[in-house]
Image (cartoon, rainbow over all chains, first blue to last red; front, side, top):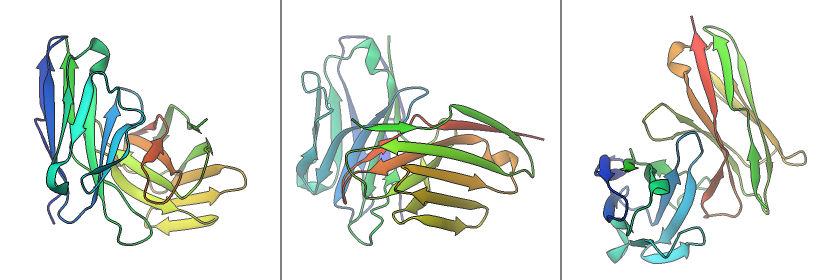
Length: 115
Length: 110
């Protein structure tokens, strides 16, 4: 079974530029999450999708961050304009409603550096 | 508010046993997860507890006490490859996202 795919793996941009990240979840997983992980901290949820609907985006800085999940499969996360404090690893995860665990499977992440 | 606490760093030697503690205060509870994260890699699932007690899986065990808001991850027969960050995470409600602690960096030396 293929895992969660993300691209790019690394991105360096200057502040005030825009950037987009792409995620392809595990096939059949209805729930998709984007987390932000700043160095030395645990992941923090940015947005959760159930199919193509938003379940929770309470911690998404909506003045600069946006995300979509068209057709309930792939998702993109965009930052425009980027700030220095956006330097972090952006992790995408997906989970299935099968079973009680709802275990989340993480992708390799995109490491963003804003200079 | 939501708060998950775990030690920042721990060290141990090969072959030893180490216990990583986690305390939590969250608005709800629908399970506690432990993830392992090697430097530069994605977190990988280790264990899940939703009822009180001990869950054992090979060299790793996880314990939960819901009344105390407390969990621990026990790693036995430590190996060098166990050097990683261990993340404690709580889910408030079924199907929702995880709330993570800051992680415990474990260093295993020979």
